[in-house]
Image (cartoon, rainbow, N blue to C red; front, top):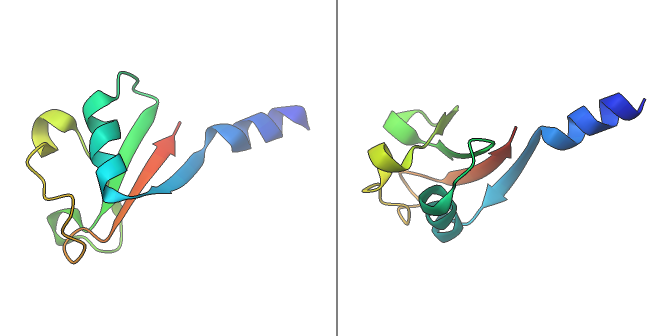
Length: 74
């Protein structure tokens, strides 16, 4: 029973404000934290993982194109 609870805690998805998504993505020293974005490459149904080196010029404040950011803890 405790094992299941620990797994549930490790698989968390937290909705983020866009400015927090950019800060966390920039300063993230851990691979356990993943900043995810809905709407990336016009995919409005699925989340895509962001990587700072590839996505640092992304317009994080464009809520129409990128409506939702999440922090995934794995």
